[in-house]
Length: 168
Image (cartoon, rainbow, N blue to C red):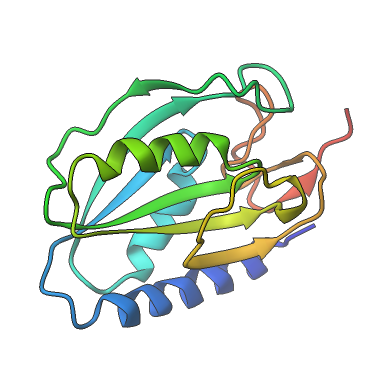
């Protein structure tokens, strides 16, 4: 569906766009990855961003072993660092319904950062139930269950260097 080469080129492009967006900000930039899916994307993305930044992580669950969101959003691991007054870039592997990410943004906004922006590798706009402003978008895909490059099915297939559809 999306080759390793296409992903690499898109990550480099996103890094340049992020650098340009934050070029005039004197605030600290913090990339917040939503574990576990974002870790591969975030590792590559943070190396494509030249502006000095911090990394932090949250673990959020809404899928369990299913292929569709249960809408039961659980925060399993919160941030380690303080984000008050900082520029926050939430890095996500995929945005589907938007329910999980909406909950995360709600929580982060109560901590009074300077700004919050979203970056996702993959978006499924046809599945969106909550309108989200995605500032940095990698790819839009059809409503198919996909795996690879951090995307999983029941914690498997994250290691695949490309993104493909899984036949269930």
